Length: 250
Image (cartoon, rainbow, N blue to C red):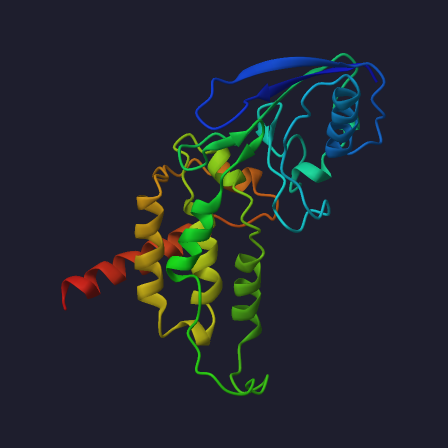
């Protein structure tokens, strides 16, 4: 396939970036998108040019490390895929494919396609945990969990924290990510003791990190590679409202 890659190049944070077009006249349709980026970088290195920096790790759609807006969509064309699961065959002969980093104030660009997503880690650190007493591991069946409850907790836990929801939101909101993390633990009996404090701390940390507010366009749900449901947002809002009322009454 003969295609062109229009790639965002930015030398360092706060540097002025620009799009650079690279010809790729012999792209293999069976290549993954990241394999094509590898091939591009090999050519750039042989030509004595700086390779394109991009995030990746497992390349199996599990870790959430890979992140790029491809053709205007986070992770590229297709449903419920990460960048490493996008394939060249999803494009057409002669296409000019624009590749750029996730755009958000809370995701500053470090270099080229690499952004700093540590803001998501700080949100999790603010309350995405369950406090437990030290000692031996508890018996697996000591706390019965209904299957419906465990299924909902598992669905929310599927979030890989890639940040696609932020990249596609017109407000750069991390609401779906935060809602998934809150719901994951909020559904389980072990998470009930800290349920209100968790919602309060994580939502407030999201605001401190500079993420925008949710306007319910559901674009986040549409591009989420794990299909996290926006119903988790409603649950998060209820928990947060309850936590605010409880704090005001203290």
